[in-house]
Length: 180
Image (cartoon, rainbow, N blue to C red):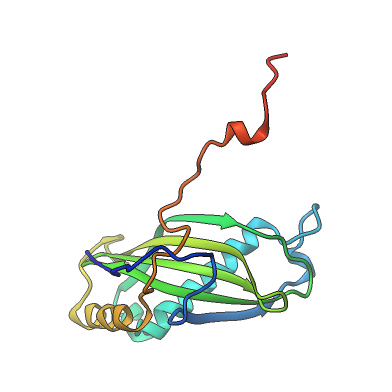
């Protein structure tokens, strides 16, 4: 797999200077949950839309899709870092972490423009598939060239702070548990 080469760990969760801006939007009232902030399904939605925009910017075209090839998201991890509310202006940035013949690995940042803070991050693995056979297949030479250019343009210099993070049990942070 062709991976970005990191010099150091990023000091914070902010997008790096070469991350691609892949979506701009504002939080709508229907995105708010009963806790009064943006619901988690909407974070996934803006990251999915942003991932689609990343693919398009990299060179994935409608012609390529109609010829029977696409990318399917097969794994993802989201980190919620801060809250946001109705009207919050958002920018989503995407880094190219790596790729091989069938896989594409990206990392995303959801940024609150008004407060200049990262609200959430997402890490996603996609597979290149033949949509007629419904199975993974090697990228065609055209798409492999697109991924090579994307790595040159949008690979981060520093390892994103949350890259590779998974759900971690933090029982001690919650305090003692009662057995009653």
